[in-house]
Length: 142
Image 1 (spheres, rainbow, N blue to C red):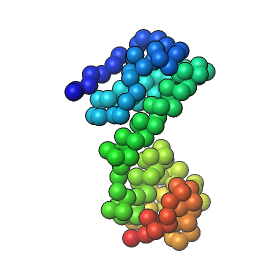
Image 2 (image 1 turned 90 degrees about the horizontal axis):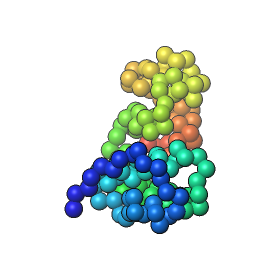
Image 3 (image 1 turned 60 degrees about the horizontal axis):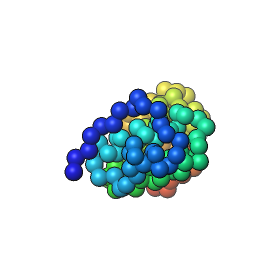
């Protein structure tokens, strides 16, 4: 069964039961359903102060999106080089070369050189990155 894109214009109901009529919470089967669910999450988050029903509905949708992403959008970082892993994690966290340089306590140009592969990460850099991203230090070592 194909999904269709929902419109983001109508006001959202306050009750869980009424929200279920707009977008029934069920396992995400395809990209359109995924996009609709993420859109609904964004709309709920924009409300600010949620009703109890909206809050419960939001929690349900977040769990469904996490389940879908873990099986469909997961990336196997073990197949990536240390620098590619770093780039991926930085992208997921909205970081750029300047942010990397600040994190590592180095000049901004060194952040760019590390990302280009012109300079290598030191063991101190690897330790800092592992702590920041809460991953194994081995992911940054080739």
